[in-house]
Structures are given as C-alpha cells and as structure tokens.
Image (cartoon, rainbow, N blue to C red; front, side, top):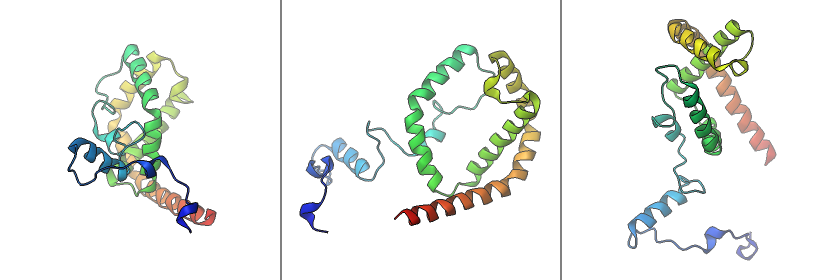
Length: 173
C-alpha cells in the first residue's frame, strides 16, 4: 500500500527519543508505551498487576464489614475498565496451573453457595453473605477437593475456547 494513503494517528506526529539521551524518565515511559505496557492514563496494564498487588486483590482473612464492602465496591467500580482490558489480554494466553486452580476454586465456591442458598450470593443480605463466607472458610477442604476434580474439565474448556477464538478471528479476516 502506498504511504501517502496511510491513515495517520497522533503517534505518527510525536517524536520521542528512545535512546535515553534526553530526560530518562520520559524515554523510559515512551519505551513502555511503544511496547504497549500503558493504557491511556499512563498506568501499567500488565494483567499480572491485578493479581500480584495486595491493595487491589487481597485475601479475605476475616468477614468484611458493611463499610469495607462499600469501599471495596467503589474501588472495583473505579478499576472496572482497567480490569476488563487486562482480562481480555489474559484470556488470549494459556492460563498457568495457579490461575486454573483459582478458577476451579471459584466455581466450587459458587456451587456450594448455590446449593446452600438456592440462588446466587448477590441476592442475599449483607448479614447472610457474611454468614456464608464464614461457612465457606470452614469448608476449605471440600472446596479444594471439588476444585481438583474440576481442573481437567477447565483445562479442556480453556483450550477449546482459545482454539475457537483463533478460528473466529481467522474467519473474520
């Protein structure tokens, strides 16, 4: 295709020194941007950032109070767009054993909740949710056992999903 008919974007007009001779921080950020590590706000968009940081995803040791739940809800609403982008990227890659195990545990917990409540957790009151969280904590061995049984199915489903996604993307082109 001829270069004069190419659609130009804003990046085509920005000149950045990637040799690190000028302002080192600007060059560092430009390199990160060029490699696709930043979103539009200049923050890291690596999917691992959402699982490794303690402030964003923390293990629940105790039952959350209502004010903590509200605060966590507001935090997750603020981060929802970033999380969606990170999920899209992560879904294109094959999951590790740890990721598969977490997914299996989540499904096992949801199965138990459905069994206990005859519905979903979102329909319950705050007090009932806290009660169920305590009960889930006690039945950790049952959750782990169920999750372990689910692993082969999850692995197969993920493999099929990625294969179908590749087929669909190649058919669109």
